[in-house]
Length: 321
Image 1: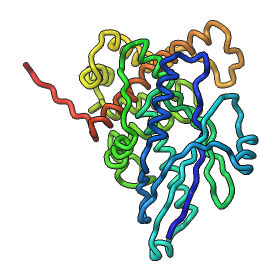
Image 2 (image 1 turned 45 degrees about the vertical axis):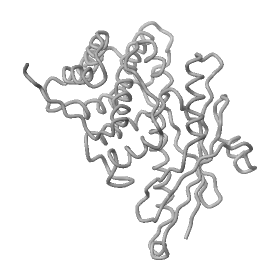
Image 3 (image 1 turned 90 degrees about the vertical axis):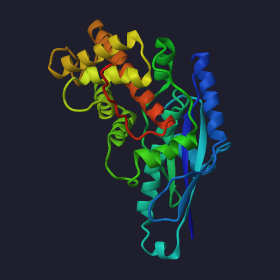
Image 4 (image 1 turned 180 degrees about the horizontal axis):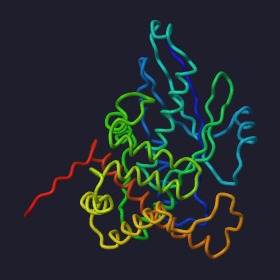
């Protein structure tokens, strides 16, 4: 027995003013998605759930209406259809809850989009999306993570270095190493805690919230025990991602900012602030944005290298020489 579920997702085209490197990365990423083979979502309790992708050349009337109602931005975009074909036995169908199944597929799809961002930093940015449930087009979550800034930051600072990974290979790493226990289990390892922390960067939020989730992800991977947290991340990060002198200064600044903020030694705007063009607000925003780029770049680069090497955890040993 079969069930087909269609998901439609917008991929944003770079602005004309974006750099040549951004446009090239977008084109490379677009080709990788176009040439993608079938993706097995590995949904429990069914025989298979295989996803294929194709570009939507022309929206049907229902999809066009959905887009007209829900699109709230002025951006050129490409819309892709992700068709999931679910196969299940007659016996499985007796206990199958279609609503739960569709929810599980929707969650798997969000995880797949996260993997795209790990594979191709700077290449994929998402607009609106929807999933077709019982002839209705229901809006997907808004995804507010933009890796373009991380891509530009890496080019400017020359650290960390990002690579382009195979989508299939990285998806298999996710299923086997990050989330082997099921679709909606809570984190069960340092790596899955880091990945779950990364997921909160897709929520539209204040920079300080993003920074804390990012640091949770970094500390889950790099830190053992409760002592010398910043030193552990600095030393182990350089061993894993490559040494650079400026990195030490940036990591030191990142943790000094974290400590000062937590202990109430940094001035910050209130929740109901209205003036964002005054010097004090701009200085605060600039400082925290720089710190956030350092942290996010390091987290993504770490996950990317772990995926490339099919790693589940980082284990460092100190040797006296």
